[in-house]
Image 1: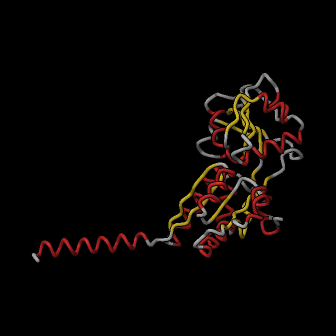
Image 2: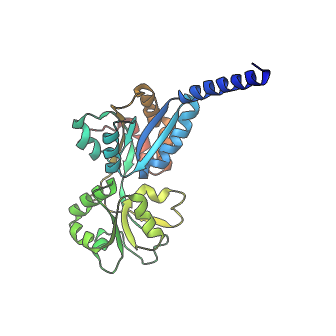
Length: 266
């Protein structure tokens, strides 16, 4: 065999070996509700540096994500937009350990500066003088929370009939406001903190007797092939650095941070 051929063979063997080694690198698969993607992305970026792994994040509506992980039977972590998904699906056996990381709460979301002087009152959603956008209950947590809040307030059906559009998730709710397709919507408060949103939209905080804070928990999945590593991520997300990141994105306020260790999840 010529020297050139020997060298080529050596390079091919080396390349194959390196590729095989690269393929052995652990990859975690996280299912994350759209509203929580930004803090999880930041946490994942930090975690990968110290744990020599990759983290793939699938984002979408909470219901769609659960349906996907159930169908595929693959994945390591699930974070829905409210605790209701854990309570609903725990009997199915796919959700194992949980870890509290913060709260989601709804607010009226309007264009920056509130040009139409919309009041912080849920009745505006059934007022025909406003173009209203709401979440669809079939696809995401914001739709479920909208139904819960407006049913409690007493105008859910009227608001649905008044809506110019029902959208699948929080991202599309914000998009409708940003693109002037609607005057007001009911969305997760934290979305107004996003750097690509805060110059276009703002939140009107509503009475907590109608809009209770929705508890957020990380869920370890039974399908995980790397449960110990996933638990390490959960531990990191609930430690000091993780808490600070969730606080930055509006999922924990100052009081929540002070009382974090005393918060219990049923």
